[in-house]
Length: 242
Length: 47
Image (cartoon, rainbow over all chains, first blue to last red; front, side, top):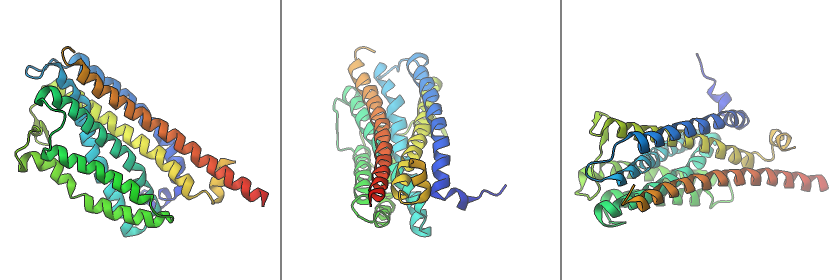
């Protein structure tokens, strides 16, 4: 089956498609989130070393994953936008940035509240934590730069360049626990397998899926507002708002 | 949860707050965009 990419790349078509899809993704996020919290708080046992405080990982790890994944997807959209000069790709990159920044903030916040009882401190200038903080500043920089120009297309291009340069930070975050001697623990979940107890792993994966679905729903909802702003002088938007 | 309930609830509380704040921001953003379109249309109608 041939997918008509150009048809879906049209803002007017995508506006309607996003409006139809977003509630489904929010619904899925709510169901997966409820299941993840149930497994995380009821099914998963107490950790032998950390006690109950380890349950913070059910939001901390998925938020950290999403902070990096959203940045990667945002940079891909920026690459497409710069290469093919596509309006919708730039709008999608803009719509992802606030959600990515929110998850980066949540990852840092929850990590801090997990660090205090386990390491004895809320903050340490550790390679993993510092590079995650740099990621938050990259998101802020992207949002600020995208909105700094009167002509939104110039803002798109400037922010896209920053996003593409900033992608170098992602492997630094991921491999920081391998390359440097850090206080932050190494990865418990890898593509090759996991060292975690099964219920703990499922709780974390369900929450990660929930955050993923939420991110899609939020970005689709935001891109609709961006499309309305950009296309506000077109007939189809005027007719829509009438 | 004891003795670490403060850390657990601060983490989950902030996560819930951040998600709620973003959903609220999305609604406000959409309403602002629609209002802007209506304002521009009304201005053009006056001209």
